Length: 404
Image (cartoon, rainbow, N blue to C red; front, side, top):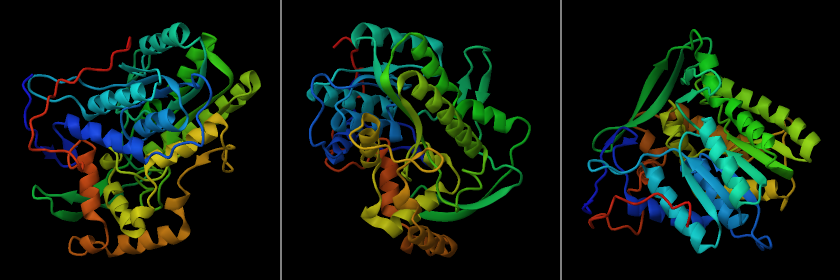
C-alpha cells in the first residue's frame, strides 16, 4: 500500500483510522514509563499468557510483564488487518510495536490474533505452550472486554449491554462537538429487561476465564505455584448506577466469585492462586463507551493531575505480586486493589463536589479537558508527542511473525 498522510476522523470517541507511527510511539513511551525491576529473573524468565493483550490494561499487562517481570510466552488479542481503504485497528499496530520491544529485550513472546472465546484458540495456545515453552505456564492475566461471546459448547451467542438494574438511571456525561468543544449532557438509560443481566454475565463474567484454566489444566500445562489474575474495575459511587450496580457490575461480581472458586482449586491442586485485580480509572476504548465515565475521568484528572497512576505502573505492581517479588496484598473479598489512589475519601469528595458543579459553562475549569481529549486521540495513535503527522506513513504493517 502507498504510504499516506493520516488525519484523525472520528464519530464521538470512535476513530475510523489508527496511526501506525503514533501507536508505536505510544507503546515505546509506555515501556519507558514502566519502572524497571531491581533485577530480572535468571534464565529465560517465567512463562506467561496474556489474554486481551492489545489495548487498555491488557496492553499495560503485556508491556509491564516484559519489562518488570521478564516474562516470555503468548499474548492473545483480536484485531483487524489493514485494507486498501482502511488502516488496521490501533491494537494491530500496538501489537506490532510490542513485538519489537519484546525482541529487543530478548524475550520470546508470541502474538496470536483471533477469538479468545473459542476452543480452537485455546487449542492453539496449548500446543504452543507444549512445543515452544516446555509444557508449562506460570502466569495467566485475563483482560477481555467484548460486546459478544459465543459459547463453544452450545453455539449460543450472548451480547453484553450497559444498563442499570431495577430502574432508569440518569447521569451526566461529557461529549465533544466536531470542533472539540465540550458539552455536559444528562443522559437517561433504561433498566435491564428480559435476560439482559444473564447475557452480560455470560460475556463479561468468569465463564471464559474458568474455561481457559480448565482447558490448560486438562492438558497438564499449569506449573506448580501457577497464578492467574482477571482484571476488573469498581469505580466511584458517582458512576455506580450504570456500572458497578448495573449489568456490567453483575458480570464483575460473577467474575470475582469465579476467582474465589478457582483460587480454592488451584491452591489445592498446585499451590497456586487466582485473584481479581481491581484497577484504577483510565481512558480506554472500553471505558469511553460507559455513560458518565468520560466526565468522571476528566474531573478525576482535574483533582489529581499527575497523581493519577498510569495503567503500566499499576500492572507493574500486579506482576510483582503474581511473581512473588512482593506478597499478594488482598482485600477482604480476596481482590488485589490497585485503585486506592482513586477511591481515597478526600479524592472522591473533591471529585463529587466538581461533579455537582459541572455544566457546559463550568466544566473547563473543573475537568482536565485537554488531557482527556489527548488521551482519547492517543488511543488511536494521534496526538502522540514526537510523531510527525504531516509525513506519509505505511499502513500495511505486518502482524508479528510467530516463528521469528
